[in-house]
Amino acid sequence: MAARLVMAATWAARAGAAICPARARVNPVSARRSPPSRLTTARASSADGGPSGSGGGEEDDVDGSPEDSSYRPVSGEELKAAVQECREILEEATRIAGEQARAELAAQFLKVPEGVQGSLAVDMARVQLFFQGKGMRPYQAEKVSATLIEIDSIYGDVELLAVKFDRLVRTLPDVDVSEMVFNDPRVLTVKIADAVPRLIELLDMFPLDKVPQMITEAPKLLYETEPIPERFGRTCECIKRVYPKETTEGCKYAISEEPTLMFDLPDLQIFQKDERVDIAELPMAVQESLVYATRNEHE
Image (cartoon, rainbow, N blue to C red; front, top):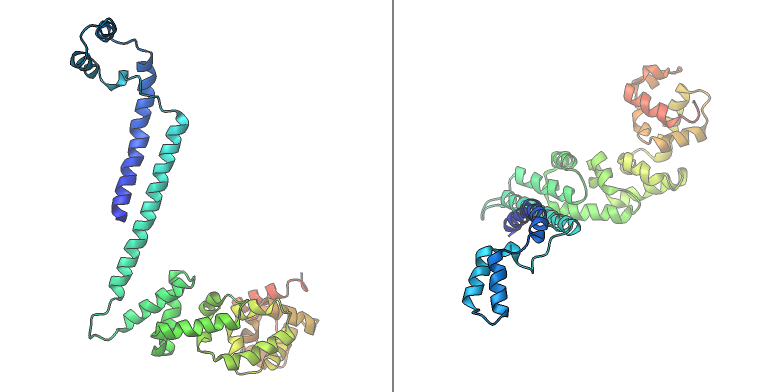
């Protein structure tokens, strides 16, 4: 059905774009042309009561339709409207055909023969399509599906993932759950009962409007075993080792801007020494995050 729509719309677009302009060019000339003398004679004899019927009709037919008085020239606006309509039909038909083709290919690919257990490749493909349906791009969905199945083959079960995903959406209404899962697929393994106390700790320490984005960028905040206040204290100490004049409030602001610092800074070997640390000694990615997070204090 979709293929027929595409073909019909294509022919309609070609007809509108090629044939109609030709008529628009030819018609004004033919409209000004005087009728043939034989047609004038035939009409005059008919008006005088002469023979009519088949003879006169044959004369009209011989001269062709361009001399038909009912023919009306197509205006430029009408022509543009017709071509635009043809294009819209073609675009819609192409879209429908593409969607139908993708659906048929996906159904064929994911079809498991009767009596045969699903393979790992089929499970990954199903998981990937599930996450694409949640708004992820294909490469994001592919990465997440591979990571989850590496964690545990149980996450090849799309029904289980759907339950866990929807539970996170209900628990974290202001969080972009799709982006959060892409940043750290392990967050799908979190038990909501264990994550809620950590979420409360975050809300007690950081501005309310910052917490959703912090969780999105650093989902590990929901399942890391070290209490949030202790992790924050160690991170703040590291920041002060790089910027000795930094305040606790400044550290809090920096971490709210770059929450991954809570996991990037404290565990670096360089901070095990009891001495000041130069920012140039840090890994490049950590340098960039720290400079961005403290930009207001050190511009």
